[in-house]
Amino acid sequence: MAHEERAQREERTRQADTVLALKRPPVRQSVMIRSSRPHTFDTFLRTLGTWWPVTPFSSGRERVRAVTFERRVGGRIYETWQDGTEVDWGEVLAWEPPARFVMSWTMTPAPTEIELTFTELGPELTRVAVEHRGWERLTQEQFERDCALPGGYLGGSYEQGWALILGHFAVAAGGRA
Image (cartoon, rainbow, N blue to C red; front, side):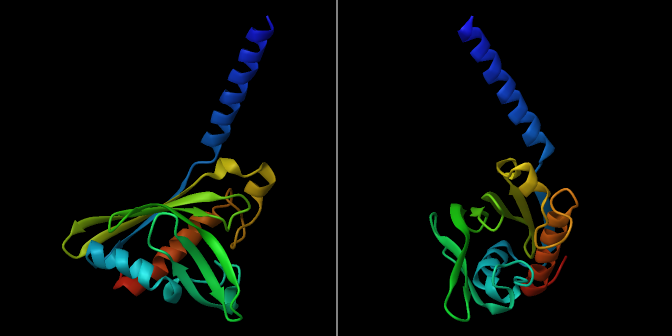
């Protein structure tokens, strides 16, 4: 009997985890760029520190002097402040240039995951898509808290944030398609 009760408890826990995950779907955004896929991918990483809106999407905001992306699995993504302080944004988890990369994102209250894909739609047309996932790792309080923009996840601030970030990138990469 004890074995059966434990199995039932485990099944209820698994179902509860599944329901929680479904309530927190990934944030997805995309933008079309008038640029080849290799150029778009390279521009995203090489110029990250110049186009990324560090205010409000960083720890240091106006103190940030550089953003570094180490191009390899296990590489760090971090900001460097004017005084030399380094603050990690995450770590490269998958590296497949010029098609995609996946990174952990430690700027949320609990680490989440970001995947960027670069899809060639034509010789000078690339779709850049972001999927920000892993929201089930946050507690309910963390989940409801504001991010850099007001409203938190439930209020759409992460969708708005990624739309703004990709818009800045589109300008840096040669314009929206």
